[in-house]
Image 1: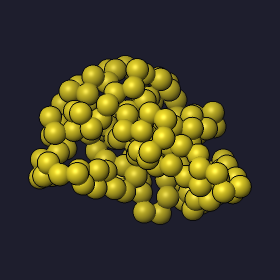
Image 2: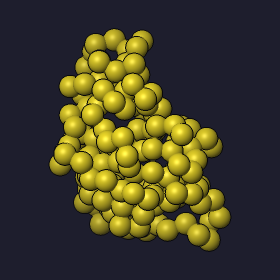
Image 3: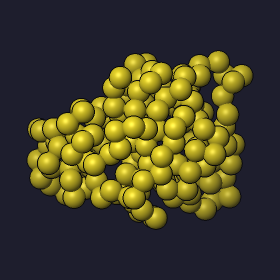
Image 4: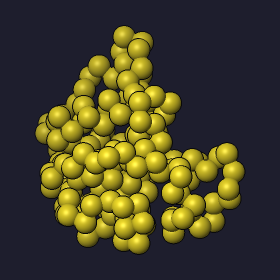
Length: 154
């Protein structure tokens, strides 16, 4: 079992309005699916049983916070089985993670804890610390999972 931080940013809606990362995360929770795009890091290695923490990036509601956890039930790769919100101006997923045991948590301010984590090694304390979160997913060590206060049972 491996831990991952799944990163979502604000996304434009077909109407021109903006969906906050927070709203998008909850929309995906309703479908019990998490999109993996062609350029999502670790998309080929995330698998059944892995633990996920969900980070809302962007500039809107709960931005900069981890807001939930879940486990991967299965990886969906057949395009006919993918569930999609066609109202968003986002690239189509190449696969999806089936989510189980979704656990909404008290939001955790990730930026405040980032430089205490193993994953921050090699990242300078600059205003651009968020560049370490590019790519849609990051591995979290068990130590980092614990340091963030994420639930053990998800």
